[in-house]
Length: 207
Image (cartoon, rainbow, N blue to C red; front, side):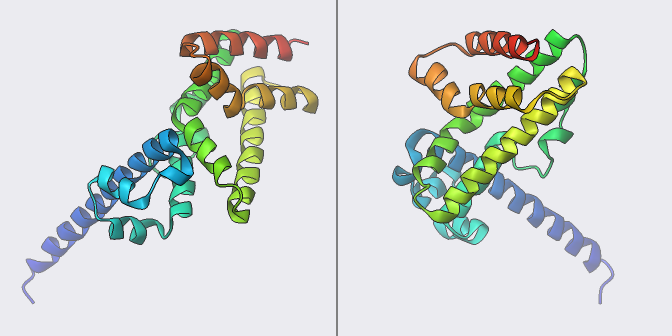
């Protein structure tokens, strides 16, 4: 065997991995955009493949089914990319632990607004598809995850735990459905949404 073959194989393997990662990222970006704007029923795997610039077979081989792609699109929309890094390990999460309580709360509301801007439309697609029992279970799990992450964020912002009722109120007020009503249906600017949500949150935690 020619010893020069091994480096070429490693290089080729690395390049294929990079290409596969880029393809996955492109498909997820297309899925987030289309599910988020057109919904579950109107979005087809072919349309996602076309927007991503790949064959539809590539989408199926990477994600298995339309609903599995919807689930993956929601996960990617929440954090903003396809990288396997948890939200709590990202710099925007750490910002909630720096500064005054007002600055920390504003950082938390800005993070929540950014998440909703990327994912609220995909969440609506999930709710549209929730007649599927498995998707309905995913929605329930995601809501519990959102509440748990909110509680951890508030702990970080305040340096203390809140009573469960107050966490419940914040969880409801900061829901994606409320974001969609205010920012999409009523056309509130993002800055207005953030200002009012920050004010409401500060009032609640100061009770």
